[in-house]
Image (cartoon, rainbow, N blue to C red):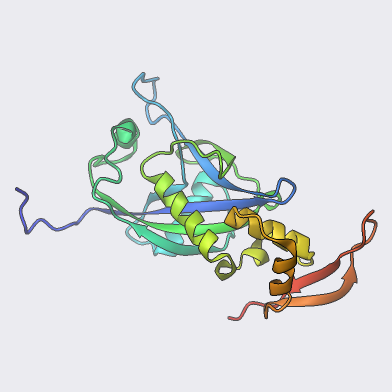
Length: 240
């Protein structure tokens, strides 16, 4: 039986879910890193996995500073808007045998329990150029419909982020981050469908969205198109 006075006193980390919108393909993709082999020589027991960018928090860091550092060190990305969205603290979240070899190479105490603070970032894929750094071997964009089994509990973390987006797409300034300054209602509907993974009725969507208090209709329309030019809209400035 465990000592009732044995309180949690181990590690805290941050993990970052970076979701990119591919407007051409109309799909969301997740930014993943491939774990680098921690050993100088090849070890047959090590099997590299894909994971979310994440790391332990340093003693002198705030949570936000740690998340910013993680993205910079692992993917060489700077300046993203990051938002905390959940905390994951299951006692066995880093205890899966598939993660043991990597943990032994990068953690002083590979068996220590870790609580992680998850952050969400939304970007346009064509606006950033991730490059592997630190203990990442490389980076990839992967469709959220084709995510492999990830390291640790990172599938759980990613799925939670997608669940939040699906339930509350308008609450995360999605369009401001993922659409150009001027956009059509078709572009906005495509984005909402990609986020919710649900096909929306065009007529009902337009009827409801035109009454939204965060859209501004512009006196501009598309040019150089073969179909009837669509009106452009923009977002009202976010309240501080």
